[in-house]
Amino acid sequence: MRDDAVQVLEQNWTGRSTVPSRSLYPHQWSWDSAFIAIGLRHVSVDRARTELESLLQAQWPDGRIPHIAFAPSVPRDAYFPGPDFWQARLANGTETSGIVQPPIHALAAWLTYQADPADSGFLERVYPGLVAWHDYLRDRRTLGPGGLVAIVHPWESGMDNSPAWDSPLARVTPAPAGSFTRRDTDHAADADRPTDLDYGRYVQLAATYRDHGYDDRETPHAFALEDPCFNALLICSEHALADIATTLGHDPARHRQYAAELTDALVERLFTAGMFRAHDLMSGDLVASDTVAGLIPLIVPGLPVADTLLATARGPRFRLGQVRLVPSYDLTAEDFDAGRYWRGPSWFNTAWLIHRGLVQLGKTESAEALRTDLLALAEATTFAEYLDPFTGEAHGARSFSWTAALALDLAT
Ligand code: 9WN
Image (cartoon, rainbow, N blue to C red; front, side, top):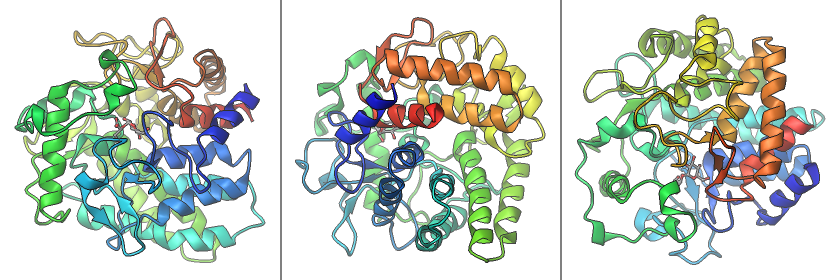
C-alpha cells in the first residue's frame, strides 16, 4: 500500500506541487496541498516544503490564500470555473481563484517541520505568510458578532454540496443553465457530483464576489455562514502558529489567545444537541442539518464538550467504528445519499481529522480501529476520492492525492 500511495503522489506531482487528481482537478488546491504535505513529508520533506511554499506563492496581498492556484501549462478550459472566470492575477503572474478553503495550512507546516526539525529555515520562510493568512480571516471574515470566521461560498467549506448549505443556498438565484459549461461531469459520474442547480448557484455567488473585486466589505454576500469545520481547523492552526512562534523565539501569546477566544465562541455559538452546526448569518439560525463538519471540532485541543461530541459520533447518526468509514452526513436523514459527494459518502480527509482528534483525546482503541479501516479502504479503492459508507464502493476520482497522502501518514 505504501509503495502504491507514493506512486500516486509521484504521478500527481507537477514539479512544484501536487494536483488532487490528474483528470478532475488539474491545478493546485489549497487545503488539498496541506493534506498532501502531511503525507509527503514521509516521502520527501523537501517536496512537502515545496508543496506549501508554492501555495504561498499564490497568496494575495490582502493575506488570503486562494482555493485554487492555476497551472499555466494546463488548458484554460480544462476545469470550470477556470482562470478566465475568476480573473485574478497576482503581480508574480500567478492566476488564482478568489475564494478560500479551510485553514489547515499552519498545522501542515508544523507537521512538515517536525519531520526534519534541523531545518527551521522553512518555518522562518512560511511563518509571516501564515500569520497574514490568519489575519485576513480574522480581520475580513469575522462577519458576525460572535468572533467566529465566516465562509461566503459553499466551496470555501471544502464540502461543496453539503446538505447544510441547502437552505442558505435556496435564497440564491442560480446563474442561467446555458451560461456556463461544467467540466467535472466529463470525468466523474453525474450521480456522484453536485446537481446543475447547485452549480448555477455556486457560479452566481462567485460571479458576484468577483464583480465586487473580491472585497469583503463591498460585496453584498448572499451566503455567509460560520462553519464548525472551518473554525475548528483555524483553531488548530492557530495553536500550530503558537508552536511555530515559540520555535522561532517569538512570543506565542497572541496565537494562544485567539485560539482560546475562537474555542469559546465555537462552543457557545455552534454547539447544540450533542454536536456542532453551522450558523447562518443571514437568517440568524443554526442550520438544521448534521454533517461531518460538526464532528471535526474533536481535533480542537481542550474542547470542553469532547466527550459528548464523541458519543454523537458513535451514535446512530454517524456510527463511527460501525460503518466502513465515518460518513459525511447524518445516516438517519431522509435525504442521505450514499454516493453523492458530500451528501453521505465517507471521505478520507475527515476520517484523518477525526483520527487525530481521537489520538489527542487518548482514545487509543478507537483511533487504532479507524486507522486500520482507513488504510484498508484506501488500498481497496485504489485511493478513491470518497466511498459508500456501507459497502465501501469507490466513488469520484481514483488515485486521489489526499487519500494517498493521508494513508501514507497513518501507515508511517
Ligand atoms: C471545488 C479538490 C477539491 C477539494 C474539495 C472538493 C472538491 C472542487 C470541485 O475538490 O471541490 O473546489 O470542483 O468540486 O469538494 O474539498 O478541495 O480536491
